[in-house]
Amino acid sequence: MKPTWLDTEEYPFESRYFNLEEGRIHYVDEGTGTPILMLHGTPSWSFLYRNLIKILSKKYRCIAMDMFGFGLSDKPENFSYKPRAHAANFEKLMEHLQLTDMVLLVHDFGAPIGLAYAIRHPENVKNIVMLNSWTWSLSKQQSFTSTSKYLIGPLGKFLHAKLNIATEALVNELFSEEHDLPEAIKQHYVKALGNPKDSVQKLAFARELVGVTKWYDELWQQRANIQDIPTLILWGKQDKLIEVDALKCWKKFFHECYVISFENCGHFLQEESSEEVASYVLNFLKEERTKGEIIYQI
Image (cartoon, rainbow, N blue to C red):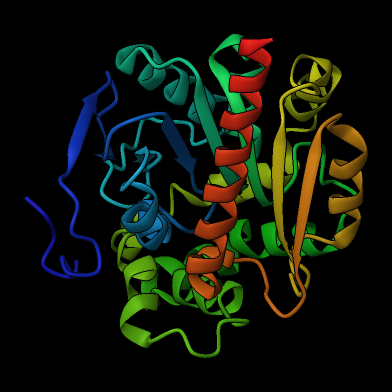
């Protein structure tokens, strides 16, 4: 049963669930055709992709999951909430759905989780679409470090547990670039994190922004597995969280890479420019399909 705070006109999708030992993972599966797997970061959930799904599902099969602790998925106390564990859950869902020739659409913390799958199973990933993201250690980046320390510190935990300030403050801060974002929409991100007591456990997810250097390094050392996958990068240049140096790194990384910069947009392109993002994705996948048909004919 969907929560009362969810606006089903904004998010009109059928809820599906995948059962794991720790609890249920919620996901949506809309449309038919080549599957596009959409992975969110923090503190968002599949709601962030609602407008893209409405457009892209007319031609493609759009699948967007909620990681444990986020959105409509369970918030189990006995789950680590570390990115390696989230990546393992995503791989289990992929095994369950038996998908091949997929398109990975990743954003924020969803990038290392999704690309971990692509590194292990490059034969299943046809294309990558990336929005403001990273997949390397953040321990030397001040913006991430200060955010993470705030969220896991004693004061942050106390305020979050007692007054629900940490979640509200985090959402407001990260969505501060979206000046026209209605409060009702913003509340979908706050409410989806659960009540204050439930959310304290998930603060470990923020800690892992800087606390899993070894895992990030392991992924980066295996990056050659995905360097040849044709990739579209859509980047909000006004992002206050991920520095533009990350974009430069990705441009050097992929051998076949197309970059579109959104000069006046920030971290959440899905909220700021959903129609434009969908248009670029559709054009990119159309060109990739045409290119594949030409190669096949030759």
